[in-house]
Image 1 (cartoon, rainbow, N blue to C red):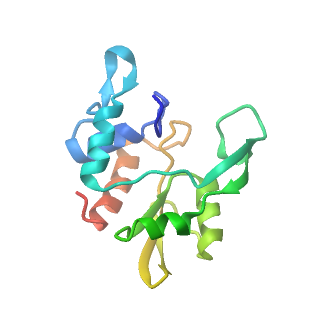
Image 2 (tube, one colour):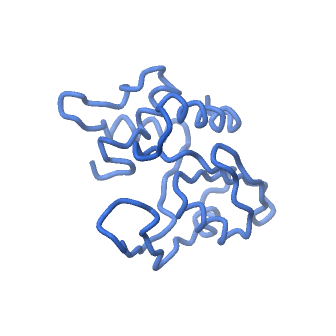
Image 3 (cartoon, one colour):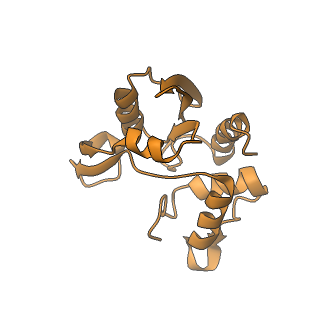
Length: 159
């Protein structure tokens, strides 16, 4: 799947399925072991959820998917994105590298996993949420990850 969180072993779309549809397989095509991109995009558009990378160029320092071994070569211009999204009131990160990048961008303290830090961007009150990684390599049960994400979505009045 050419989209965000495409890896079958990543639980992001199972987390969303549990929270919004009470079904971890809501976005799953089990027979093909893939996620249903069109359903995911429709859901995100309906809810007003945008996804983007915190870096437009990275260098992988080791041959694995760990954020620990990524070097940000070119960070994304997040302020420019926010200017194009005037009703955006929160940003959520799912990994340490993205969190570090955004904390540096906005000069804010790093929130604990499952919590947020408030900041002001050009007069707009914002929140930076630090969510648990949706990777199965992150040692937390799917239901507990979903519980953390549910709190964020409830705070943002999306569920």
